[in-house]
Image (cartoon, rainbow, N blue to C red):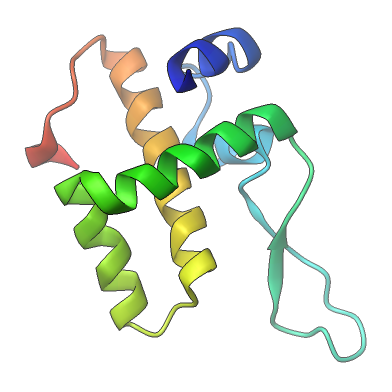
Length: 112
């Protein structure tokens, strides 16, 4: 489902930079520093269908994929909130898939 959604709704995948892809998917952290909200970042905008699919893929990857599970655990051990770490996993999935399309190579866990 994720691959079909990304190919249909994110045709820029593989051509844009990792920051541009994250912004298009709505996974880029934006600041809203006013009043008491200084320092906190939130994700918004972008394509909600893509963001929803990546969120569900990140949930599964945190449980089943050894590379992404270790990445998520490392972030949680460093003090990140669980949902912040989950969004980082979603961004990592998006970055990996974009690199795979750009180089026309299958996924290699050693390079992640």
